[in-house]
Image (cartoon, rainbow, N blue to C red; front, side, top):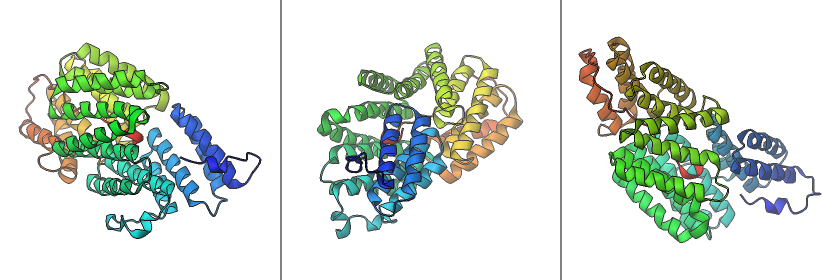
Length: 401
């Protein structure tokens, strides 16, 4: 965000300058992982911005910053509202067909870069909410707009391709996900040193794709690489390293290294709770995965407690009908079937099936997971066969992580 033009003369106490000063402080706090401080300064920036009737670029940049702060706090509704206001401040077209016009090509470089970032932020939020088709439309618009950038094209294009890769992985379109990550890697290589944090994120996400495909050996290699890259980065936030370690733990669990996975996930859970509390998607995803591990270790009571807490957090953050809610519902189905509670299992299975039917295609991994449990649930099979590990959530989206 380039707000330096409005910071050159600190004696200028116009509302625009005060808004820019607070936004700069919020950015520093956000980069350091201090979300409460970032939100405080963002709130002040927005208050000063209310007195400004010009400078749409600054208004869009501050609204985009507010969206990122709320997204990291776990409030996707507020994050989406701020991102929409950012797009409105920049007068972005609402439909994909409006992108690439002559008017757009005359937009200044900074406005064009902010436009890409706003569209990407909106697409990311819709992706987490399970609105995959809408997210794809916005991200494709963002990718088209990167061609209009006079500079920053490598980094902006890499971030957009990376997020498309995450989207297609969630969508179950693994080949398209791999293609998107390949494009992102090419741009990362061109961007050089400035893209090193994104290189770590890309390794993380390639591990997630391998995990989704069941290639756990490749997944472990990529996840380990993401941890090494992130820890080697100067100023890398502890929260980002924790996310990489937690993601690697999900793979360790699938390889049967349950004790190692449980230790890493429990440590991550404590940090997330201290940073965000329990009403946050990072905490919920980690609690879900730790619940799966504890179930496989035979700690059924702790597994049930963790999964139910994860379910409540996901419902609050994402909504009751989000795809990631179905992930935890399926894990709870397995848990209740193994414990001889068919009525509870059936109710949860029906709810998961309804979500997946409306949100996912027939060949999506979650759709197959629901179908694989149908016979047991319908027949009220109370066999106590060991759980297979369930569905583990894997989330990382580059600049929206």
